[in-house]
Image 1: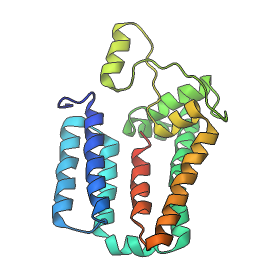
Image 2: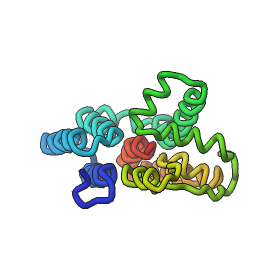
Image 3: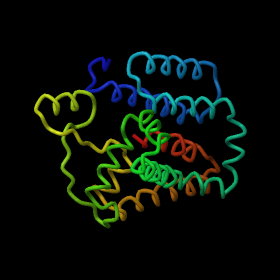
Image 4: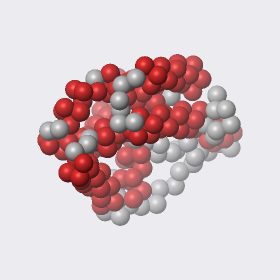
Amino acid sequence: MSLGDVYPTGLSGKITFILLTWYYIDKFKFSWVKISCSLLIIMFNYQFTDSKVDILTLILLNMVLIFNKLVFYWCSFKYIRVIVGFTPILWTLSLFFGVSKYLMGSSLAYKLDGVFTNRIMYTSQAIQNYSPYTLFGQNIPMTGAGGLNGYANTIFNNIKYFFLDSSYAYVIFCYGILFYLLIILVYYLSIQNQFVVDGSAELAILIFISSLHWFI
């Protein structure tokens, strides 16, 4: 159910980031109102959108709220902020590691692909036909435009569905390694700069949580 949005996952993603923005502005302070809102959205996603990544993201967000003081204490250490700044790279490496295992026929990789709604499978198709090692990216024809409607349209028109839904894979394949590294550098410098300016770590937490969602 998309309630007027293009796809159910599009709806759930927007709701997730509205909550994330609210919690970021409020400095991730714990409150039962926030926890309750997150739990309601988790139940809504499970029932109507089946967006597993949004559910995982909101669970992680709730953990940050519950262990607020401990999380901010960890982020006071520079090496923790360095790790958080490079979290997107860790997710990217995890994606391509999953792809390598998927191509080898690993049953665990197939199960993870189900959790991440075929992100690993379509990335594996891309890596078989295109190089992920270009500096400035390449033109990769895609059919389906993502989502169940796109998939149904390709079946109806007898066209093979292919769409890079994972943000990490999309940036690397379509825009190149150089652009990908520039994005990571901006995230890293922003986190460090915020902490130097006002001693806060909200941006580090925001990027850490968001980086899981960018897997899709």
